[in-house]
Image (cartoon, rainbow, N blue to C red):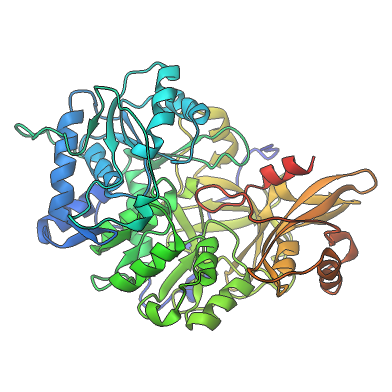
Amino acid sequence: MNIRSTSFPETVQSSDRPWVRQYASGMPSELNPDVRSSLEAFDRCLATKPDARAVWYFDSPLTYRDLDNQATRLAHLWHAVIKRGDRVAILNQNTPATVIALVAAWRLGATVMPLNPMLTRWELVHYLRDGEPRAAVVGICQAGAFKEAVEEWGGEIAVVLAHLFDHLAPGDRPALLEAFKPNFDAPADWLTFASLPDPRGSLPMVELSASDTALLTYTSGTTGRPKAALNTHGNVSFSAEVYRRWLQLGEDDILFAAAPFSHITGLVAHIAAAFAAGLPLVTCYRFDAGTVLSLLHRHGCTTTVAAITAYISLLDHPQFDPKLLGAFRKLFSGGAPVSASVVARWEAATGVYIHNAYGLTETTSPTHLVPYGSRAPVDADSDALSVGVPVPGTDCQIVDPETLQPLPSIDDIGEILIRGPQVVSGYWRNSEETDAAFRNGWLRTGDLGRSNESGWFFVVDRAKDVIVASGFKVWPREVELVLEAHPAIREAAVVGVPDSYRGQAPKAFIVLRAGLTTTSENVLSFCRERLAPYKLPRLMEFVAELPRNHSGKLLRRELREKSI
């Protein structure tokens, strides 16, 4: 990021927050969590209802007491090697082991490094060198790559291995897990959850403050070398409280964990929000549409926050039956742009509206949400759904990307700046990137958007993804929304590719709906009726799927590289 201005805009005053008028009844303009950390929220549940169900792993329940017993054993094991502020890595799918490791690490005052379970050995070496964890919980399917990465890194680390069938009740043998056949010979000093020794004595109390770092959450790496955001316990507890209040979560709700626990959405919108609201969290190792549909019905799940691709997968699955999802009504989507046509398709099938959400790793999940019970307006120029309005205590401005000064018109497209209790202070051991992205509490998101007079915000695109064709700017998402309105197209991605005449030209990668066909000529004709000539994706490629990271974010870089 090149910052030519010497200062960010002044703080927006609360009187300049028109979006507050869009809030649901009872939602305050400011939120102050009554806990300093999500560990405090967990401990409150443990004290008040120790035998209540905290997690369902497939059809196996674990109570708060069960989680605490396992976390206590793990914390006693790690106490000899971890001191306050040390890092603990978690490389695992969505199993109770991740939740247990979070509680254990926080009890010791450690900072958790959640790592994407799809990372390769080569990628893991970078994270180990950067974060220097002293201990780790590693899933059996990720253990081979992790062991090789540790050997290349050369550091000392205490590892506990998480097996697929750990924490399952006798007789609960999910078909999804039977498909995995991990083959790994663990080193002699790697323990398992089954072999954790009984705790002896008591651990010294570590009192967490809101300013202590809870998580080192790495950016997705779509723009370059991954860097870690310093998410504090205060950031996490604030965002968890936002979800609790905004989604109107109560003890009658059951939350489905659709997002990976290695991603900020899974950590905050699922685990931390469940602790804050004291409600059960249903998880099933990884997202599998057939398994998820079955669990949503059997457990009566009421709510989730998921990438829009998850909803598409459920809709397209042969077992999809809206009559079995009667309780599944508090639905939000974030992590990737949301098409109005997909939301309309879900609503037509289920009668339930999907509310939009927006946030970043650097904002500890949500900065904007569509108020529950409201409908997001559609931008007249781009046909994009609004990502919502800023959540309580949050300021947002649209500024010139070069000067960082306010734009002359509210309708102008500019870079989105955010300031609030959820915004991190910077990046781990990376002052250059911190100075570029953060100043006076403001975060440069790198996203381009606009707002309207009522306080609704619209994300147009990533600044780096803008296509300049013959001097005209083309926003890829605008073209994608048109493509996704085509009756045969399931989803689409547009990138700029070199063009000897125009400089750049839009190229579309298209995924068709199951059982439907079309031609590039038909699609181009459809687009001609809806787009200016310079925006037309004359180059098209039909593909089976689009490349995405584990949180559902589109990897445009891979598509650009494929087109060179």
